[in-house]
Amino acid sequence: MTTFTAWKFDTADGAAKAVDALKAAQTDGLVRIVDHAVISWPQGDAKPSMHHSHDDKLRGTGWGAFWGLLFGGLFFVPLLGAAVGAAVGGISKAVAAVGIDDAQLESIRAQITEGTSLLCAVTENADMDRLGERLHGLHSTLVATNLTEAERSLLLETFG
Image 1: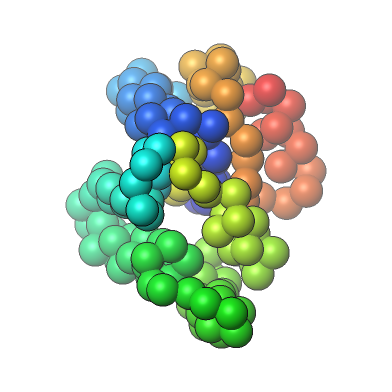
Image 2 (image 1 turned 120 degrees about the vertical axis):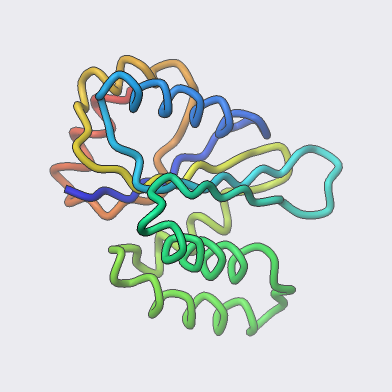
């Protein structure tokens, strides 16, 4: 099953550290990374920066467009007043097919602040127990996912 997850970290480099652990887990056959993107907002920077990786060369272009739409609209377009709602509304239609709803979009935008980072990952075939062991201790918060409530509960239990 293809899973979308967005994880917030309380440090600007936390998401990058999680990517390293996720890639090591992939090397060991615990998960397949379809694609991922990292938003990092170091202290003192005016706005966050995004790094997107083309993990799956066949689908990388499509995911690159997705990440650009999602993060460009949420973080990099000047959003003021009513424009925030309009931008989020437009983005929500485009990303609904991935299973991300309006509340999750708003949560992602609201939680990423100066000094934090975000890892968004699209994965498949994860061995949740062993992957959870690898990523335990990275001090992350699940912000958004396309999993059902039961799957989400299991994910949160596994990853602590």
